[in-house]
Image (cartoon, rainbow, N blue to C red; front, top):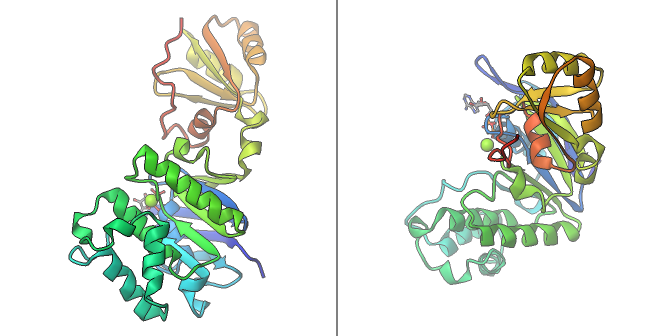
Length: 308
Ligand SMILES: Nc1ncnc2c1ncn2[C@@H]1O[C@H](COP(=O)(O)OP(=O)(O)O)[C@@H](O)[C@H]1O
Ligand SMILES: [Mg+2]
């Protein structure tokens, strides 16, 4: 029996698309875990399987030790916000929440408490049809919090929030984690998550690429060396031939090298008689690491930088 979330060997295909491919990871209580990957990586599909909305082809996903369908009063165990578009537009935010209270046996005042928690107290009487995307995200979060659950599962909750809203959400989620709750939050934008998450689970093409503390990710593994040369194919071959070295081209035609420091990259080039035009080392640059880990599907943050 575990207090958090366990995903084990989870797989799901849609026709020929293997959306989730033998995925195994766990999410611990008392921390915020970022579930990261580019669009189409399989995040939403994984969360939908976790919440019993679609059936996996293989593997299992449990919440506090049980499959979602076996949890007696799910709203009191796990709060989920997967999609902020499914609200009835003619209802007010408060009515929407009160319907959930009635169905789930919570006191009607709970609706006002969660409206307050998500900063929608003054908008509770307004129709949802007039809400911005950011307000609908807050309402989805309010629904997730209704049953005061120990576990929260949020799919791209920062979507549609303005920078101020993102700061607000960061504070709220950190507060919930510091009360010992399990918080799993997905995003395709690493920078949104960088100051929020303690742990990360990074996936790409349905597969696990990394899981662990964000501090570990920002450590030695996060050293990425950027190189520009007129002989990039030759340098690619020379670097890729080395053990434990990962090389990718970025969208600007630079080589991104992980597993070596700048001096070692320079030596490799020198030994192969390759002239370098530009060489730079970034340590702890999560954005770059994310880029190399997820097959360049995500553009790095410094693409405008120009070499010599
Ligand atoms: N209901 C579906 N039918 C067909 N393909 C789907 C369906 N849901 C997701 N996919 C495909 O599965 C892959 C993963 O999608 P998704 O889980 O939504 O990724 P993410 O949430 O990381 O952006 C994508 O290639 C997507 O097109
Ligand atoms: Mg998604």
